[in-house]
Image (cartoon, one colour):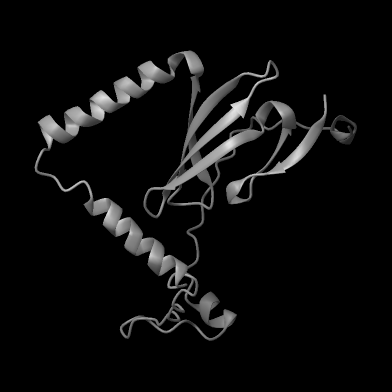
Length: 173
């Protein structure tokens, strides 16, 4: 088995059997700021082909991506395409016939033009943190902190006479 390191999008590195998982054809579809679809044709060891459809979504709270994959084999191409087309047409024609489905295409084209122009490359510098005017001033020294600490109340421990004498030999490990 010949193993190679492949550099994937979004800076993830994976180890693959290059021949088994190499894309013969790839099509990338951006769908907004956080979601991208990848359509990849791959070749099996038996010189056969299949399609992988990957949805990649940027996570809100981290730098990582969440991915979902569908593997579509040649014997299912026609039924899959028919089912998907019928479902999309049902939504467009029966459920939401008045909706402007080209709106997102226009918005996406505008976004891509702005992105290509570098509008999103240099984010605005963030303002430095400014404490609120009514916030108390922090103490100037450790002594000031210590002076403000109230002593703990003393706890009385009752001698019940149950104490056990422990020999120093018993404490050696």
